[in-house]
Amino acid sequence: MNDQVLSRLRQDHDNLRPLLRVLDQQLECIEANGDADYVLMADILDYLVRKPEQYHHPFEERLGQRLLAREPAAADAVSRIRAQHHRLTRLGKRLQRRLDEIAADSLVSRTRFVRLAHAYVRLYETHLDDEERELFPALDNTLAAADWIEATTAFQWTLDPAFTADNAADHRDLRDRIELALKVQLPQSGTGFCPLCAP
Ligand SMILES: [Fe+2]
Ligand SMILES: [Fe+2]
Image 1 (cartoon, helix red, strand yellow):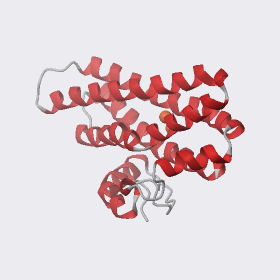
Image 2 (cartoon, rainbow, N blue to C red):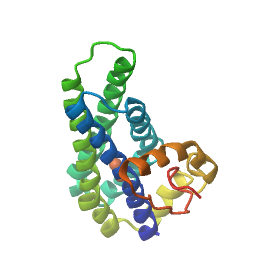
Image 3 (spheres, rainbow, N blue to C red):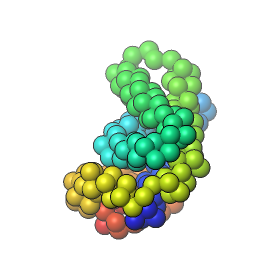
């Protein structure tokens, strides 16, 4: 079960990275031309802020609690991941407010906005890398079968309605625009786990 759970978490990360790349591209547009597709940026931010909070982050934190119970020395790593989740949410919401202000034509400094958004993208990338380098191997090496089952069933892994194929339609438009911006075709898992992965 651990392989399956960790590969699904990694797959979530692989779905988030293209969004971060497009956000970065849009920031380069602002720096080069003073303008960007702010609607696309708002849709990406909405996904980056809201979706992982519904399932991915709380699930990782629950796994982290199981890790702590078995390996107290993992306390620093577990609390760093939790702090990164909080900072990502806080910073993401701050960025959303700045974007709302830009949409309302208020005099938001584009330079400050770009600086804030770059910090958000870097933090997100660091977070995904930290988890893959530190947290996931520690979980893999330490948790017992009972831990994986407890965490997975607690989150109704296969029943969470936010991750069913039907909900994927809500995100198809965003997925199409990401593919267009990056000129790539995003992978389709068919697992129904990630709303960006069309069935
Ligand atoms: Fe995380
Ligand atoms: Fe993660």
